[in-house]
Length: 304
Image 1 (cartoon, rainbow, N blue to C red):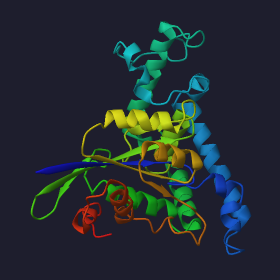
Image 2: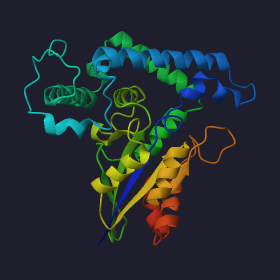
Image 3: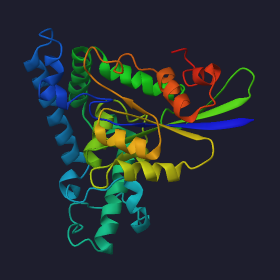
Image 4: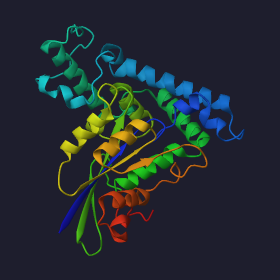
């Protein structure tokens, strides 16, 4: 039986979510007057406030802002698995220098962040905040012609509708002769903690596990891609990068992986709504070869 794994590596900003282009007005301006630029700016500012407030109040961002790491597990070797139930993160003396003691304290914070991320914002925020957040998401999704919900739907389809969308999933054709495993990975140029918070706020937390979120802020996307290749090494692993920027494009080319360029302009070819797993399957087949139409269809079992 043939077994293959497809690893989809996603950029976040201006790919899965639109924020910078909403705040600076370039998204609305591309629609030649049919969208209100100022409304977009106000929507973006509200998102910025939500992100910063949650980062600072619940995810230790003020404490860890100057020690951004590429992923949460990078400090795991320093974690002694101490019970953190009654641990006081505000009085443990965390800060410079970056010695083993402070690396352990940072590892504690990373473990606490991973735990909060897994439980979700509904276990952190009060009902008024949840209501405000939900309404803002719906307003933003409407303003962007369903970009956010369409991007999430594409991610879900890439995960082949598994009940636990954060996990990799398996699909077979009727003959049962090929097994495909699918994994969604996020590599963002933003710093790690705000990126994790954005995942939660933009309803992506159940799709990307915390260990599948990488920040290229300090190390660059090529390094992150190299780590991912090592992590998912195997003869039948196929990678596909989806993003809007030059850095992920060049890194994908260096790795000899297919790259799908996202562009929010209304006339562009790859955008949301529109992009489907079947589109990604065609890019994969061009680079890796050997895929027939049946294999490509297995990337989109829902028929998209």
